[in-house]
Image (cartoon, rainbow, N blue to C red):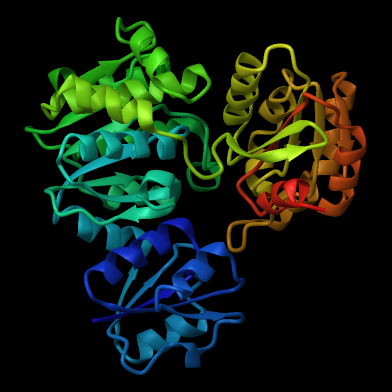
Length: 434
């Protein structure tokens, strides 16, 4: 089997590529730009082609092509695969096929998916169930990888709702953290998001379970109709205090995430000592409140949060962990359409930060509209935050932002570098040895 991935640098695509690599398949792939993900795959004997997509990128011996949902039908490699009658699947279809081969445990929701997936997987690992794991981030406990090869019956999968991808999956157990107005380029409004989650949860079989967050009112309304199939978890649970003392992660949202993993472990019959051991050992994931280093006496953290609710939760977590320190939020909006759809929410998302620095929007290829680009941008958001009384700076480049931060930070400050785009480079530059 030789599988070619179009857009192999994506976090989900690269994890799936590693899965098939572990199964003995030959893997090749292409992407428009190189990244640490493509560099890592290159070291694993994966042939990576960087740059403009061309039909010549498709190797002669390929018998399957997997592509990202954002790949247009006009893509030269995809057209060549059609011409050669090679089996073709988008990412969700390929994952969906995989979920039928395991007793799959999915983790979905607008926020907290990656952390909850990691916690759930570690609980299964500690409980000797040896899961296979596909996750949308890197986990230190998995060798700093977004994939873990297991030989047990379970696949633990981060199930994204963008483009209705998760509707392709066949969950045995479905963990849902929350429902929010997210991915509105797909759903247009929150009501459609709710309908998609209801359709997804209906796929859980009679012997399966739904593990749902009772603190999220929208999720509660969507999930209640499934009755005894649902296992609820809440910050009001008696175990919340134990979990709070056990985990190393800051913020109430992470206590909630850990409670979901606890409930999963109990349902699977994993011993309580093993569950708590797994929760206590977890050090967090890549780009989720990840400590990167110190600059001029200030602590620099990198966080993937890109939705207003995630921004608020991360700033609040920093406040709880460092109650007497000055908190900066350096943010790169991810996708013009998300910024446009949630404009009013973004304006209030930074209220708990002392200083805000905004850089230009990360333009997501294949997911933007010209209307959104002309309607909103980071500079306009900065102006609105200033009207709100926030100490806000707009920087037109990472270099300008770095200069502003370095000249303004002082001993003890906490700097949150946030966004789902390429802003991680700014965090790395801030802590680089001069």
